[in-house]
Length: 196
Image 1 (tube, rainbow, N blue to C red):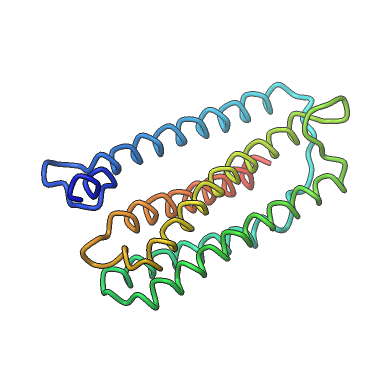
Image 2: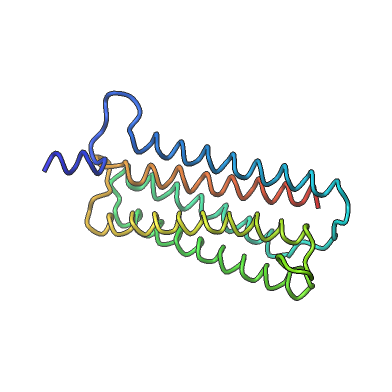
């Protein structure tokens, strides 16, 4: 049984950084590099001309507030687990999940607004500015879906009483990743506001 717990990362690793935390760090670094490449390419392509200017969907500001709130609820879930307050832990995880879904619905509505303003992705009717908009928000949305899957896993673990003050690894990893996704969105939103 100890072997299974170790393989799932349930026990604390006293020999330095836990392998799952190290893996998450590598994942975050690779995502940062990818978005740095996307935003650099955005700036270079914009400077070349033939760049369609359009209004950013209003939902982006609302989504920024939503994802900031979800970061707060995720931190409250982490704090509740550390205090063995399982009821609050579950409530905050449910709220985080709901806010994440709300964010994705907002993104979908933002894309619908772009389409209604004749801003498309790819094809003859598109412009690089629109394509970049879809890529930046879409790839972030994909990573948010992976975050939601992880939140769902932590919710299931909490229902089996496997998330508490003596077993914090799952909630720690989920919290780090969720805060990262929130910070990444804030960067994208500011970038688009300043360079649009």
